[in-house]
Length: 242
Image (tube, rainbow, N blue to C red; front, top):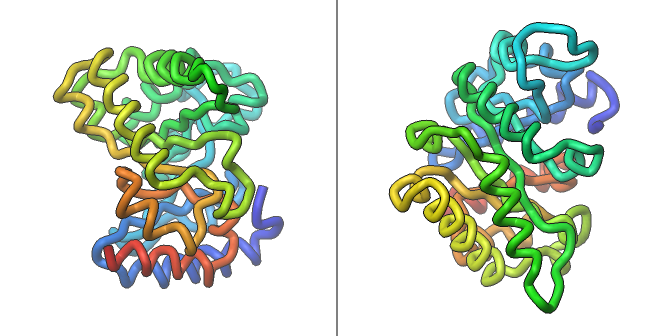
């Protein structure tokens, strides 16, 4: 729920659009709260896209308070975050995530599907949990649709902290490989090469380069650092040099 006002949202959006619009090697996706989406119907550049933080799994019906894929598309939205850890914490299940992913893809939008473990244990049981989450969240997706999917690995234990407490690049690479293996086993080897894998969890300017060069991921799902246009702009510029 940031920033708190439309005025601040406009300032932040315009600064980030200005920074991202100049970069040739980076695609920037800005996902403001629902209430501000109508302020930015068109980003004005192919390098900066508008995204939403959540979505419902149907375009019509008795679903008071929900926002449909069709509504988002009409506002100029291209990307939709689905299954964010904070939504899952409020009770969103893998089945609900799967329905949302399919609805987003059907509308021609690109889902950013979030997966990640709450904590890690010495026995490694979190691998089984993460595998089940990935497979169930993507169930019913066709091979061709995987090309339009981003999978954001966001370990809950690393979210909202400093860069020192983020997952290290080596660990991120291991998880990126694990995610690809899970997809390969469930949906096929060729399918596993199609989606882009992102990392989210205390990503800042200080760890942008190490994560992107050594972490085996295609991009970042940025949280608190994205609310500071100057800091986020530095992250974009770093990514553009890699």
